[in-house]
Structures are given as structure tokens and as C-alpha cells.
Amino acid sequence: MKLVRSRAEFTAARVGLPGPIGLVPTMGALHAGHVALLDAARADCATVITTNFVNPMQFGPTEDLARYPRSLEADLIRCQRAGVDIVWAPAVEDVYPHGTPQVTVQPGPLGELLEGAVRPGHFVGVLTVVAKFLHLVRPDRAYFGEKDYQQLTLIRQMADDLELGVGIVGVPIVREPDGLALSSRNHYLSADDRQHALALSRALFAGRAQAGEGALSVISRAAGVLVAEPGIAVDYLDLRATDLGEVPEHGPARLLVAARVGSTRLIDNVGLEL
Image 1 (cartoon, helix red, strand yellow):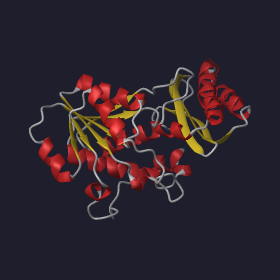
Image 2 (cartoon, rainbow, N blue to C red):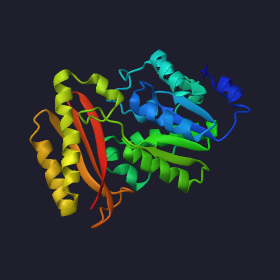
Image 3 (spheres, rainbow, N blue to C red):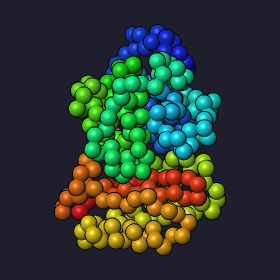
Image 4 (cartoon, rainbow, N blue to C red):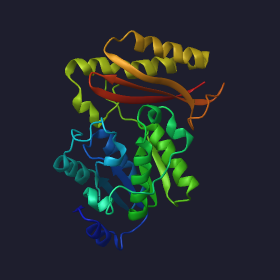
């Protein structure tokens, strides 16, 4: 496994790599959910590249950029064990050599819903950095977790609409045994907050269990679980089609939730069949 830092180092390391090439973009602080992405890429691809970059463009002015967990040495151990070929851990000036981009990727109407409504500008930063890495790395496939389901949906739309020539692969959520979705931000949770946070997955699973009764029953049951948990503040609970359009009367759908637990904001979702 090779660790590279600068754009020039990466460009040199990229030459002559056998394909297909799989890319796993990350912001570091790797956990078992990230390892699942690396494993999926390793199973599909001759070469696996991962980026380790905390992207300032996707953080709002009051968000947790400064305190976002960074653990490169531990990340490298996980990458080595997963069989990664190249870890690219660039500095901000390597990714944005001319400063904040003046031309960015706009997410369109979907970027204004759910996370986009709560975090204005977030998806502009996400899509812009992902587009840059797709152009710089030139992978055949790129792997993203379903926990950030709206992000995954928008990246798929971007790759399709802009004809980027890369396959976007979604990888299922990895959970703790008690149901908590793995997230780098779980690191912030106190012991009490972690117990409160379990209400998110409980609500989603309870809603999914009502899928045979229709959309209103799904939302009602999930909302009841959240309302009964005093330790969380819900940003949204929504049931959508799998492309995040309007929910169908019958067929596959996605139930999504975001909430603050103490000072930590968490998101989660599950698929279901109405």
C-alpha cells in the first residue's frame, strides 16, 4: 500500500495501475462502515484507491469542521488490512489549488430537500469535491455508503446527468449490534447520548414494520417512537421514493431521519416496500 500526499505524487502513483479501478472517497476517521466500502471495491476491482480528505466546502460556518475527527494513522492500518493499493491524503491546497472554486456543481431541486434544507450549500461542496476526485482519479467505479442516502442519490444523478463515465456503487449501512448506524460523528456521543441515539434506528425499524399498512402508518409509527424519546431533537422524518421523489402508493421506498442528540447531529435511513 502506498500513501501519497500531493497531487503530483498521486499523478505519478496512478500511472500504469491495472483496471478496473475502484475509488472510495472518505473524510477519514474510518470505521467498519468505511471498511465495508473498501471490501466492496476490493471484491470488484483490480486496484483500490481511497481518498482521505476533510472537505471544508461541505461544512457550514457553524458546523464541526475544526473538531471533525482525524485519525490518519489508524485509518492507514484499516486500509492496509482491507487491501487498499493507494491512500491519497491531500492537503486543501492540493484539492483546491486556486482557492475556493468559482464554478461549482449545483445539486438542483433535490439538493434543497431534507439535508439540503437544514444544511444550505452542503451538497454543492459534496458534489464539487466528488466531481474533482472522479476527474483526478479516473476510476471505473466509485463506492459510497447508503447511510448518506441523499448524497448517494445526488452523486448518481450527477454522474448520469454529466456523463462522467463512472459507475456509482451504493453499499448497505453497517450497524452496531444494537442498531446504531456507524458514523464518524458517533465519536462525539456521551454514554447517555448514545442511548438516546438508538431511538433513530428504533423509529426506522418500527416504521418499516408498518409498511404493509401504507405510507401514513409508516410515518405515524416512526414519529411515535421519536416523540417518546426526550433526548433528541428531530430535524426531519420523511418517507420518499427510492430516487427521493414523491412516495409511491405501492413499491419500494426510503424512510429517512435526521436528529440532534446532545450536540451531535445524526442521520439514518432504511429501505422498505409499501
